[in-house]
Image 1: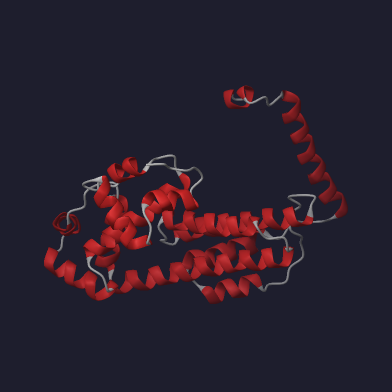
Image 2: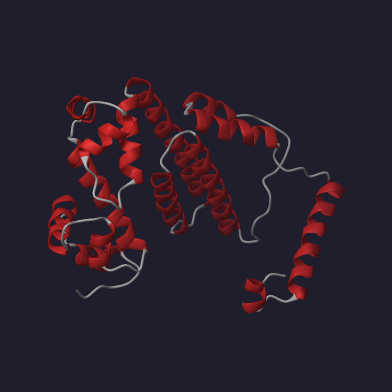
Length: 260
């Protein structure tokens, strides 16, 4: 047992009981001939998301096969929620492998799971999980299409995402990816409908929203982390994008309240 388990009261008996439970489940499924759903079907399902192939995903979900979904809870609603959480988590990893930005994928997972936790109908929970899979596949398809047509734009987005905590200079982006800054700016504006600077501000505010919802950082710390020149400028840009100040946003959506 590691130190974390010891510090949190996990006993050797707990581990032994868990191992016993695993052995019992394996024995019962072998004895009663109750196999789980086939692994190759899951691979096809996840590969369709990785490829951004919505039709392939639809076909894999409609396959008939011998097997059962594992039991992850004794309560039927909790069972449905746990299965949905597993499906959505696996789908997000496949989408990331397909080119989706991790932070975007993780945020989608958060949103869907929070929604599912509020539901009390197992059929609707299953439908919501399937909707998440389709959205991941569609997002990857969109990324693949954009990458094929505008590789420079996608490389620009990736550079921005990796440097959101820094002051991003547009000329530096051009130098990093080896293209004329003026050409890149015009291409980005034509493709995305907004300037690179507007995109940078939008992505910084998206990250700020996430931090205000889930982190313990206050507004000043977030402004510094995202390299805004001042807390007041951060507040101004944030309100322009969200319609409320960082403090009001934190108090409405965050896990803790903020007074300054």
